[in-house]
Image (cartoon, rainbow over all chains, first blue to last red; front, side, top):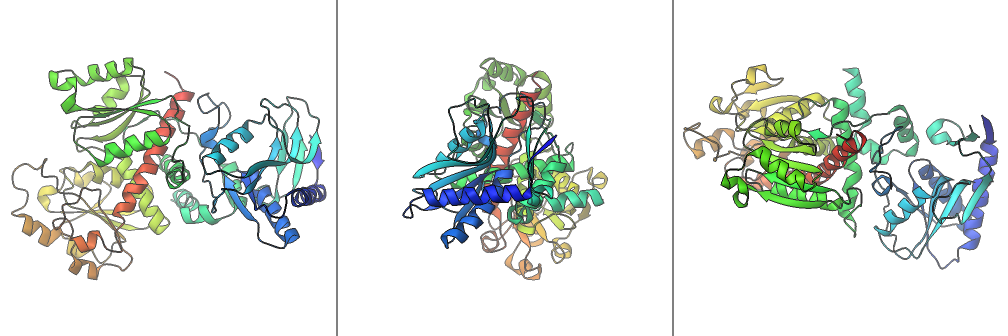
Length: 175
Length: 343
């Protein structure tokens, strides 16, 4: 096991992400942050807070549950059964620039499912992807627009993101 | 008991909805529940955890019916057959719509227009349908146990949509879902189920689900409409609605099923309504926040007065809305179990 990011480093990366998102989104475009359950949800809330402070206006934030859109629903699951949770997006996504937030970008399959789920909710002006950690191993033509950090890990290793709100501490480890 | 209490409180929708990711994620981590039933035959056999899992899954599916594209792709390519040997509008349509919302294809099968009227047996009918490659059979049948019989003889998933006077599990689930939504939890609630208990599969499924989730259930009705086995069930029995109306948190008024009544279980409709109808007068003595339910279709003026059915305590239409989400959850879950444990 190796600690990839500690709390301080994670803070800094999230700050950078918020800065980059703010800088690269034209002010006339309305931003909305949507996190993919479950870690992405918490990161989205943090990013929305950072952004609203930076932009000095409220930034919309929502949570997307992608279970129904997973591409492996009809394959047996050895580890854990897909569990449907609520999607909580209390605003219309039409014509907004959606920043989709996830903790780790790996195969790209969650992102694909999230995009399909979003399209069923409306027609955003654009969907951009922000992730805390990016690792190699994409199985679909998907890439992040905003990346906290990139890591080089072996295929058999896993990248685990812990967050204060859900796990008691902020940390990213590789094991 | 404590364990049950925890489970119920944990899944209170109000809490789950509003609490932020934090606590929810912790709950999720500690919980590695797996739904393993490829058939839903009744609620009697379900654990508290299983019932709660269906309700939580339904909660996540509610949103689909509220958005512009009312569809999700999770049962794409699956075929659901509605095999109804008894009349039904609400339940059949609800199952059809639930299947469509999850992108399954639906075959409608009703007795009057099928080969059953030519003498085909239940098993032959089901096997023929199965030969067409169906995945889930939703069955309503006049004989108690028909869904169980079917589940033992075909490979497809079987969902009971009402068997005789035995069970109507999705109605029981949508009823507890609706109560949970209105009251937060069923733990400690007093619930009266009123009317023709003897012929009611709804009463039985409700009883199993409600008591498992911690409610205290009282069957209320004339002795002629009480089931013979009532004394052995986990409920209290009362022959007087007036005696229980003041203390209950929820009242579920059953439909008088004229099509099933034999003999003369009560002297007249007027007399039944006088003693067991939910009237405006009786409502004045009930708790102000009493939840009024009815599985439909209502005989207005018999089980309850229109003012009550359409009044502010009534959740009757909410029950119909919730029925859709609950049935989507059931179809989703039995399919998941079938995927993981193929025949």
